[in-house]
Image 1: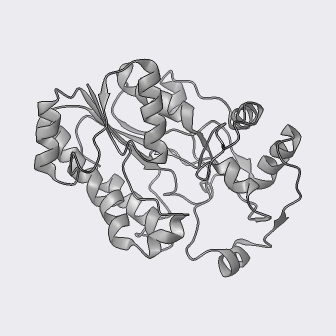
Image 2: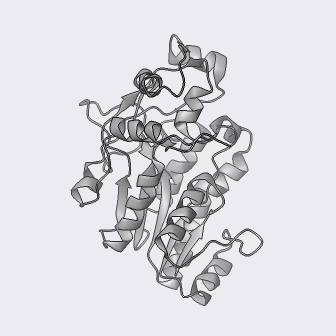
Length: 290
């Protein structure tokens, strides 16, 4: 039995769909059924349901974006920094392996040698550098809490997108703005991310941290060009002159723009589509929001 926490969220919903489609037995308890921030309740729940694996897709991202985390710091701290440690304690007590959905927003830019950040590189966009959003800082703390957690996967998701039009889809977000910030990023196709994370457990990969991003990187302008080429939307967005200009006009807190190296998960035998091809496939199979 698989236990899915956060099954009603954007990422959790993708897990729910995948598990249902795959015919895997799972339970995704709601808040009325389980207080997952209570370690004793969660431990009992895992034992009583003969849990074999847990997926923690719960967290706090803020709506409509991470700026909301600056105004709801307690919720952000609980969901992204404290909760992973609580879940880790419960899974250790119940003696089951588990996976935690983390984030790639712990980094900014590229490494000094021009390469993408690997799992071995310490975060450079966190409270310890005093240069980050509250959200990124809390996600970095969440990983620190799990540094010595037994039988734990840490899966780094980075700017999710797929073929389903929706407010949380990166492609949809771009299409809803007339002015954009041109930056380079790694991205994660949400469906491939979910599939790859489950394969970590099913193939019994070594526990630890994995950058779950589609190989390669892409700039905002390149994504806009792919959208225009698909014919879904023909528009000519303008661009902020700089990140400082963007911060002055459109944002309350710094944004993470970074490139991650996904070689570790690829070399482990789990394939992910190159990022530009994954974007093209999503646009080719685009499902407008009803």
